[in-house]
Amino acid sequence: MWQAADDETEHAVRYALDEAGYRHIDTAAAYGNEAAVGRGISSSSVDRDDIFVTTKLWNSDQGYEPALTAFDVSLQKLGLDYVDLYLIHWPLQNDERLLKTWDALEKIAESGKAKSIGVCNFEPRHLQLLVDRGGLLPAVDQVELHPHLPQQAIRDAARTHGIIVESWSPLGGTSNSGWGRSSKPNTLLSDDVITAVGERHGKSAAQVLIRWHLQNGLVVIPKSVHDERISQNIDVFDFELTDQDLDDIATLDDGIRVGAHPDELNVGAPD
Image (tube, rainbow, N blue to C red; front, side, top):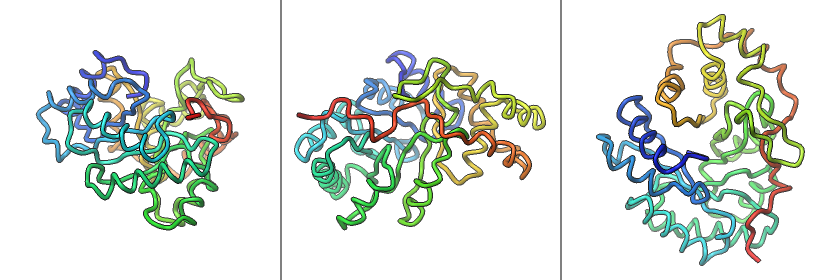
């Protein structure tokens, strides 16, 4: 639900659940639409226990006590008794503070108010910090991931420790993306390679990209607030990419991001 306004968020969530068959909703404190997500869930006909809800801790709330308080605020806005996954949004550039934040997430997990806890945008060295600390490891590392940026090093590190990798901006972002120091706007949805693969299967570029994530064993969370695209994005279980398709898509790996590198981003960090 990134960049989704309140009115379109509530409709999109209800439509995704009731009409399109989705069961995973991903939001964040920083998106400013947790309350609308909650209204969309409550207005749907799907039982709460059948919906997997993810939200995230914003950077300004890192630290032990601030994280505990921020989680309670998110839960209140969502109107839920628990979330299924609570994530640290960015590692930022203070390892000591980060570890205190993780202590808070462990406390939240122990309370049962978050069924699982995890992280976003963690590089292998950040994951190793938590491994070396001992205790709970993240269930998930949600990172920018798409054919331009397949993140093999992160995937290898995560696999070693039983951490699931989840892809944000799985379609390569939007045409006006490119908000990191060396990032560029998305071109994947109009890329000749992706388009050609789609033509072979009678599928859109977005469907090809989503299928690529699934066949790579990744959790994929494509964003849309448009009914037609929401329905199209989940219609990816009636075809399979061939080895040749996957080889063709692999040629797009050039390391280009649409977002910021985690080692460069410190927006909102507490003083």
